[in-house]
Length: 281
Image (cartoon, rainbow, N blue to C red; front, side, top):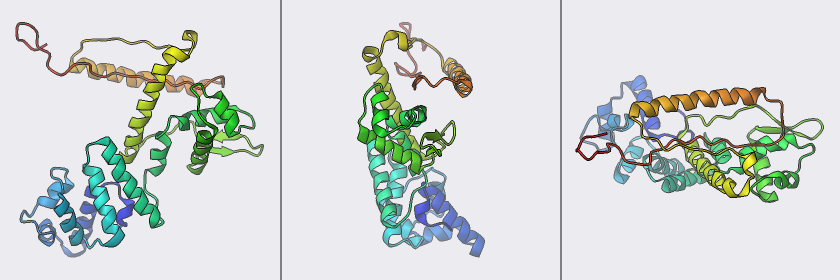
């Protein structure tokens, strides 16, 4: 079985611990629950299925039943807290603890690269901009960023992009992209920084209203009343539109400027609006 520090989901870790024991010696959920001090023989199965959570005491009991001690136990505690936390800020704090534990023990976490990439709007901008400037340096790149960023921030971005293989240098010392696209994947850790990326890009869109010439931007919107079915139909149209835009980008030969396109569809009211007659609309 893989070390606990290779997991991003404690429920998966517990299930794989059970599965290995079951295959090796007929270990049952009842045996597992008893070892962890639970009266319900299926409680840990419910935890694995996402139908129950572990309390602080439960974390210690379950970890003991799995033989976790020392740094593995510390990581497991942080992992459970990370997975069960709903507040984004607290979730990030738990992930920071996980990273620190892993780093102290010469390990790297799955999803760290995606997390770091999406944590700052500067990273995707530098990834697109660096290959377009011959003999690009951090200072040259920083000078070309519309909303302003420091040379130090660009240096940090370049180091990250080269570390994760999204940028490299050719024989002439110019930056080149390793591929045309990057995906967020399905990792819980990546989703944290993706939210931050959306927030930052949304703030830049607001700034563009005052700081970018109207002839060089296209910002519009609709306020609409729709049903749930209408929402899903529009979401599908947006998905198809993104694919068409991606196709245009892939076939575009121009390198004149780096743009950001935000597509936003979100509710402005609560569900089940009620009209004057008392009927739902």
